[in-house]
Image 1 (cartoon, rainbow, N blue to C red):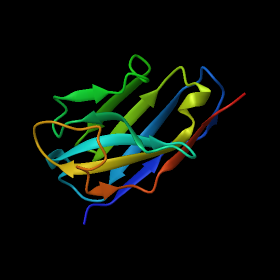
Image 2: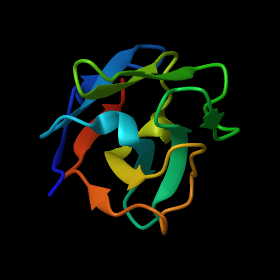
Image 3: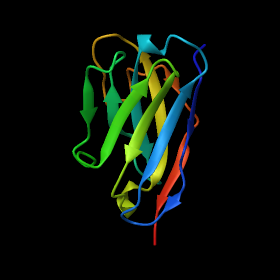
Image 4: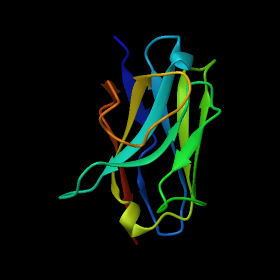
Length: 125
């Protein structure tokens, strides 16, 4: 069974940057679309970005467009989320998730079958 492990979360000041990584436990990640989600206390989990299996389709939430960049390295079985100009409202636990799909990706929670344990991102001065 595919396992995902997120890393890279930290405490950062407003305006700072972080790069999150999502590492898969097995090869063949190029069969999976990957989504990045976040959940702040008391709020629903929201889709931040997603990338299709081969990287041809990418989607961002309006709240992060121009600040976050998703990418993947299928040879390394890893997907990244580069986050810049972080703001306090970006504070949340960030999760990556995988869906076996080739052509597209989704920022909705329901299509995803495999989830990581999450990594905390805190933006505060």
